[in-house]
Length: 69
Image (cartoon, rainbow, N blue to C red):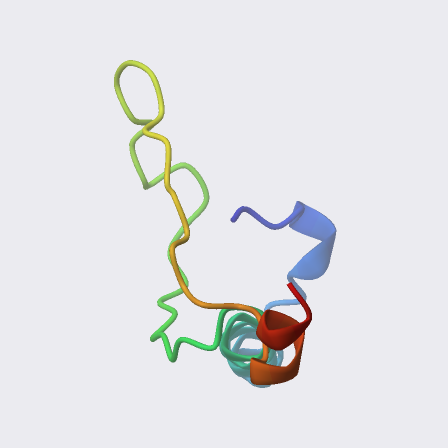
């Protein structure tokens, strides 16, 4: 993820807030705890070639929904 330049105020507290909010959002959406490291814009190299397809094989249905099928 890359943030727009306007998101940065230069305050360390703002960077810490962005980092924490991103970690919390990933946890709530993916149910996976992650450690976010903020780095300078453009410092992460683009991947070479085509992106790889990711298949989510988690069981997302509740027990009740399975019984209905």
